[in-house]
Length: 135
Image 1 (cartoon, one colour):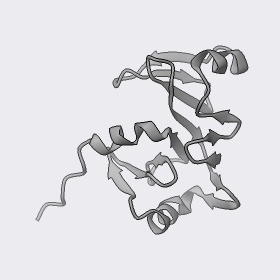
Image 2 (image 1 turned 120 degrees about the horizontal axis):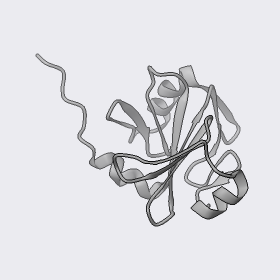
Image 3 (image 1 turned 180 degrees about the vertical axis):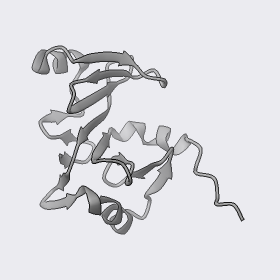
Image 4 (image 1 turned 90 degrees about the vertical axis):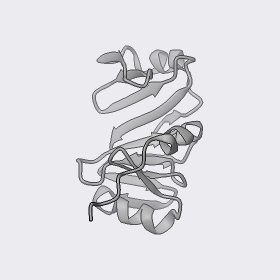
């Protein structure tokens, strides 16, 4: 994954419209509505999620390596990297979320990484934080 946070993921700008994406990439393998009312365009190796208005919210892709600027971060090192570089990093719904880099991912899962549009960060913040450990 080549990421310019909040601007571009690989060859897709966050300003792309639903219709423009369909013109560029053709019909997805699957198109569904998820449980938070985002329209999901699943192309297999990459998934795009749009608001009903057509505004792009998230791009999820396999990312064995994430490239941010001139830095290449292997997925296995991504959690440590964002924790060291983003003082605002937080956990929600099992995801590690980096507001600085506009990323959300589950460190223990395979190398799927979600790039976030800046306008959807408040939604991630609003999710219930993880419960404190018992004891």
